[in-house]
Image (cartoon, rainbow, N blue to C red):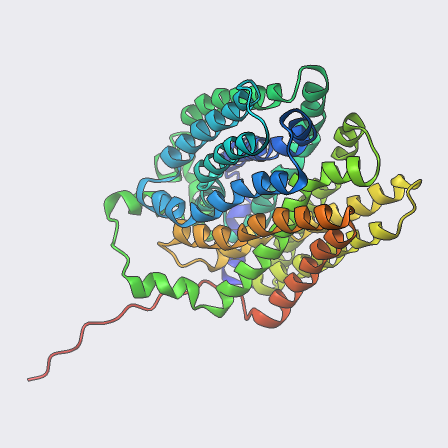
Length: 458
């Protein structure tokens, strides 16, 4: 049995408290809004194209604008988290991304069209991605601080599964707003909701070392199980300057590169679902925008379920004594194999859309089941560089958000169908499996090697 499980076992039978789950619920809600705001364009997209005179390539560029900035901002965002902590950086990020979400709706009332409108929306989406960039590294930092190793898979899977809940809760609502009030209202209402949520964030979130609502028993349980409960306190006391050669080791570790590549592949699947998927249902399968809004929610429920089950399986294996490396790899490999089956939709008759929905639901479930990457990073990131490691991990992963919308837009524009696009997306499932099985070694915390000063001899 691994060390963290054996340490936490005696405490698990005591009344330790559950305040850490309140914190998890808070970051889950914030992440739901995060994904809802970044997916607004996928629902409003058909109305935007019609009203502003855009073509598929322009829309693909607008979709990719978010990911360009999001990827660029990951490492600076991770550094800010290590420097100033999750409460201030995450809260400020929430306020700013809500404002830029609202501004996208204003573009629709400025009388812009064609390339000018596309440039304006590209700029707004770019800024949205830039200010959202600390969000997931912050989630990872918070889970690392608040959860022991044996609970970290489920906690990470839950906040990661917020992307599916965003689809379930807000896709029908955004489709209704588009249909009845106009696509501009999607951005205005969602941005306003984020601003309200920021008030609750600053009122409720504290780090473990300063949260008066966290009892001593629960704090001891968290610390014994491997939670980095003193990470924020250590940051406040001393913030060592990282040397270039130490930071460079984040890019030379084979273990970390396997995790990065795995995240890139699952992010490619994510960006298909949050950008082109509703448009695929309308343009590729002949559904109405209202039908697409409701239908898109069904696979998302499966994705949410898969995410929770994948995390629970991973944590269950750890509690049974399985090494965390095998426990994390198992759901990832199974899930990515299931996600790749979405390419089968290419061979479904035009009158059998229910089969397409079933296939997409299976793919959603698989992608959710595989979403243990953040738990892997929590287990492997060098201590003291959790935020920066999360920034590198998410930055490399979100390069897929640049590539995927553009490639799909190119395929749709040049072929007039989604056939090649689905093959492109499905291939990432296989590549991700190869990264975890062949490239990755044993998942354990990476130790940063520091250069020792030369010893003087006399």
